[in-house]
Image: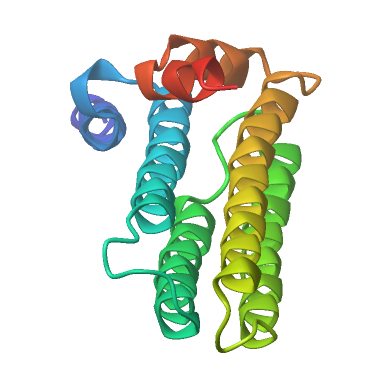
Length: 184
């Protein structure tokens, strides 16, 4: 009988040790799950912002309806990638996980919707005439900049959620998240 008790304890301790190793492996460098989540979300947004900045500032090929359409297509691809990445990150493992995930889902939906609207606006641009094209490019830049602001606001909303102290600490402690907040 004593052997069975020790065996059950050994099995339970072994299972606990394996579970702990899985959790520790999932959180690189001793990061908590919330810190990893904050880093993943902020990293995705920062990468997207860098891509948007490059797309909206490099007009070395000149400004034409075709060039603007190509840039909007690039922005659309990058934005869909951001939306997919945010959805794939999933909910953080905290009490506020449902609310945080809802905010991230809304952001993903908003960035996709805005880029779809921009695509429609570009289709309506005149095929010639620099003034109309420049105005259209400025409108696109403005809308993309607004999306970047919306991403930062979403992070602030997540930080302010009730029972989200763990997320607030993770966001405030993440360098990439801080860089995003400093850009406001």
